[in-house]
Image 1 (cartoon, rainbow, N blue to C red):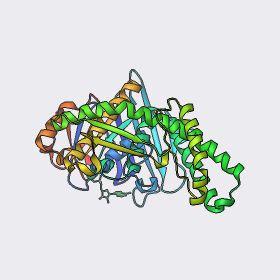
Image 2: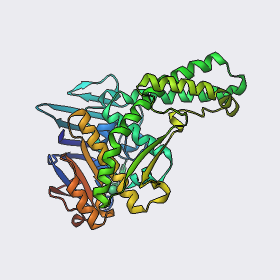
Image 3: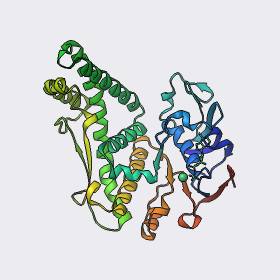
Image 4: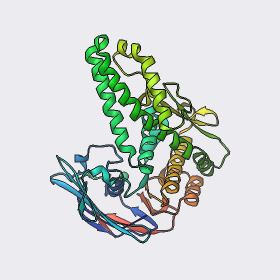
Length: 363
Ligand SMILES: Nc1ncnc2c1ncn2[C@@H]1O[C@H](COP(=O)(O)OP(=O)(O)O)[C@@H](O)[C@H]1O
Ligand SMILES: [Mg+2]
């Protein structure tokens, strides 16, 4: 899939931008705060409907404006799709595909697909398990757009169950609690089946990309550590049954602690490099390569399952890599429409179109 053109109105620092990117590699060169990341963010926003900087949507609206509009046309195999997302500073967002208003904005998920690598992705490796759970869930949405609704359903059920436990503690009504257990187990089963599938789809490839980047033979293992003892329950129904059992077994503890102590929201995902926990045992350079390898592996996994290469967004990645890793990265980049930002043109050893970004304009 390729973005044929992109139009921004009052998005972040852009009053208005109309851009026709190259179908292959686009290198965006510009000084600090020239709007490079903002532009990538707009492309990623069409694909995931959220900012990869994890800010509320309203922040995307240019200061002083009342709404941001991002439009673009996507070219696929013999088709083209016109997409539009309107984000008000406050209130409901609206989306259109081929000029038809979508009932739910989340119906847009799956129309554009993108994978992003950001300097902050180091957090995937360095920080707590929530970052890695999020990564698996976001990858699942790129592969199966319906995953979005199940994730929301899980969060909602979890909030309700927790608030019931918090209010009532040991006096909680068992029947109401059972209702939330069932809903949590149902949504959690789907969530878990997808996480397991993502791990299977990216684990080996992450290792292969890591070895290309690092030039060594280190083994990579993605070790999903469940809090609820579910080992290879298989399909969603299997995971659902296992989670239902675990919730029942944890009920007294949950009543005592007034908190849901088991479930996918408490699971850990450990990234092992050569058998060691990369969170505490890897150097910063190794951690960066691992995060990048994970993103590239996810890109490949999404491409394989949907049959088209997602857009690839690389924000300021080359400046952080040594010459060996830069060369390796340019060798292994997928055949996809790619958007690369940099403050220093010479840091990016890629062929492709170079764009100079200044004063909110691209040349
Ligand atoms: N909602 C907004 N309205 C106006 N300007 C914004 C908004 N959000 C960010 N900016 C501005 O965008 C600039 C940063 O752009 P960014 O794309 O992050 O730069 P870089 O080229 O370094 O990646 C800053 O000057 C910031 O003030
Ligand atoms: Mg930036």
